[in-house]
Amino acid sequence: MAVAPAVRRSELGDALRACRSAFIGVGLMSCMINLLNLTGSVFMLEVYDRVLPSRSVSTLVGLVVIAGSLYIAQGVLDLLRGRILGRIGTSLDEALNARVFDTVVRLPLLVGNRNEGLQPLRDLDTVRSFLGSMGPGAFLDLPWLPFYLAICFAFHWLLGVTALAGAIVLVTMTLITEYMSRAPAKEAMTLAARRNDLATSSRRNAEVLVAMGMAERMNKRWNEANEDYLAGNQRASDVTGGLSSVAKVLRMMLQSAALAVGAYLVVHQEATGGIIIAGSILSARALAPLDLAIAHWKGFVAARQSWQRLNRLLQQMPAPAAQTLLQAPSKKLTVEGVTMAAPGDQRVIMRDVTFAVEAGSGVGVLGPSGSGKSSLIRALVGVWTPVRGKVRLDGAALDQWSSDVLGRYVGYLPQDVELFGGTVAQNICRFDPEAKSDAIIAAAKEAGVHEMIIKMREGYGTQVGEQGTALSAGQAQRVALARALYRNPFLIVLDEPNSNLDSEGDEALTRAVCAARGRGAVVIVVAHRPIGIEGVDQLLVLKDGRMQTFGPKEAVLGQVLQRVAPPPIKIVSDAGAAKS
Image (cartoon, rainbow, N blue to C red; front, top):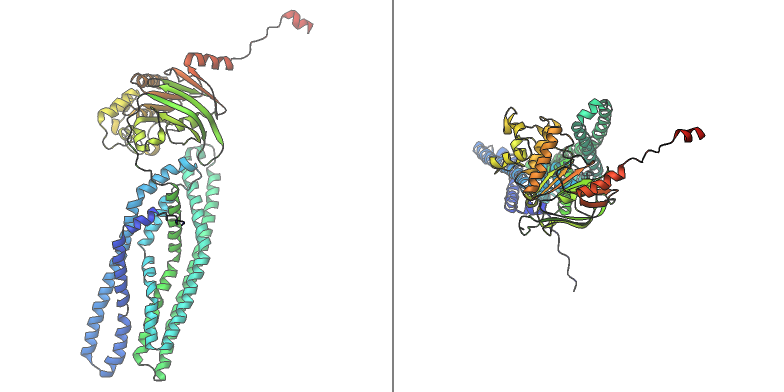
């Protein structure tokens, strides 16, 4: 007998199920609110059919007191329901914000930069905001529509038919709203993301735009993107706003129709005067959730699209499973037939690189631009996953460690250095809340940057600014080197570490590489030219994505220099020149 596949549970669904008791409370409150919604109809019915004929003031006072108490209870319950729904949204955010932020950070490493940037965080905000709006209340009240219609039929079948016809019309309007608003809402979301990406990239490259006279052209591109977004957003608003206006008019027409039907029944002595007002109020109350749902349909569609995107994203990037904690690596780095392609791209950048180095070794990686050097180091530190092959520390593949644990044993200085908003000390210690001052200062001294830091206005407490803008490029690179050396990692990978350094910085870099090797670390230094690899003892040469040679520095360097040496100059004698 075939077994049905297990239904894959979503993390968003699990987060909402954790609020099950709150939803039960909201459901009970909705039940009470909708029962209390009958207060106005019953009050008017009693006034017209009991108070006016009897002219009893005491009865009127009693009805006013009862109705007022019920209205207050209804208001309190409605307030509590809204607050609980808002807190459910907050609880959902608290349960998932760290997970969603983690996907935002890791997504470019899996699919490259062709992702939606901060869209997952905005999607979570959209879902939370919708839960805190009036929209969910309207949808919770919709199931009570048959209850109100049944009461209208109990008053008289003509009133019931009138209310039912109005309900059918508004339900039809709701379906039309859903059909017509789906595409414009999706288009508006896409255009908004495109506009935000353009603004972010322009802000990040402000210096280039101004220095090279590109600001005006980029401003024109921004205006075009903004106009497209405004037009798309206007189309979505026109659809939902227009249908909402039509629905509101239809509801007012229905209320008047209910009054007319009630008056007709009274004229023919088939109903009392109270039925006129009570039926009108009740029919309007029955259709109010539909009207409110249409008014909030744009928010509902946006929340639903955000929910679907978040579900797809979290399913594509499941949370890493708990792994066995391995011993700290201390012996060997092994690269076994590693072939690399950029995330989200099938084109192979580097193929079949194999080498192994023992603790205390330093490897310089040489090669022209596009030879695969950056791809190799991204594989070494575990930020890119090889298409084939493995990178191992002490025999264990990098994927056997979680990134947080592996990060303790890896020091990485990327080619494009960026520091984070915070102090120099926080950046060096990688924002470790339990960092010791001795470890921070030790890393700074090993990087040769301690003297530079203590000369700053606030020393290690100096704010570096967002992306390190308060420091020069050379200072930022040396602080980033100290960050890579923090807590003596076993594997240290430096990509073009001297690109912004002066001669003093070059000397400090060489001393840091030698010191790290001396304590048993494996150091990988990437360079375009032989300059900057004084502290290593082995060289790896890449070209066109393939390993050309690997071995002791002196032997490999001799081969490299021999390959790039100019051809010998041919000496032509004067006699030969004369004959020619």
